[in-house]
Length: 294
Image 1 (cartoon, rainbow, N blue to C red):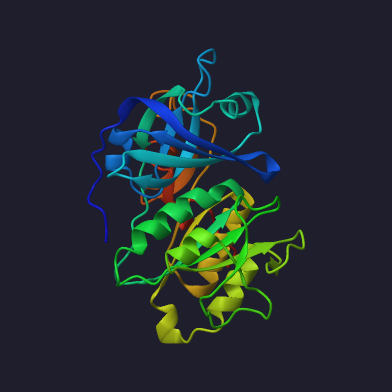
Image 2: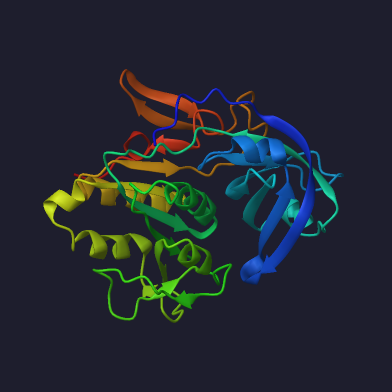
């Protein structure tokens, strides 16, 4: 399921708001009619969205779901700053200017079909998109671990999918993933019922410790979330000798590689290099960005 080199076409669309759901914790799920973007989007990519006709600067938002046949894309975001608070006021029927899909997507490896997906906070959307893609290939066996320190943007439900290696009582799951038949567990430090009381990477370690050597050779890691979490994921992958891809979240101005305002330093074969998160990423090999302890 390795995607070919992505010579992407970025669509500029006048995207109509189809639905806009407000969730706890100032979180919002926005569905937009954007057939061009929906037709080409791959897990890990994002859109650059106009939040309000009076606001010049766009905002980068990860894609959570697409339906190419119906022509829509779905985004999950948290209203934190001026732009996203304006975006939260948009209503069905209104239109927003959208650029997308943008960026380098995840590259699942068929040689490692046990895919462990970790999403933290607003880093959950790429993991949901990736899980949706992986479930369409019977060779892959995704496990999705989602963590949040604010209420989850969905109603938690006890999982019907048995999963070896989970601590007693850790049964909380995302209904959408359950409907897709994908194993999911939740973690938080906030004491939410059914959730693992700790960090998402600690829950991943518990599960990995239940696998034998041959099973671990089939595992690959994929993650999106805040930088401290991604650093911990890279350490997790290094400790177990697993390949690991991470999607970075950075402030962006143009989002198409022109301004170089979102560069990060990565380790390349010929030494350190500066890469643009928008077009050279947002997905990177975790070990090129984060240096695990030995």
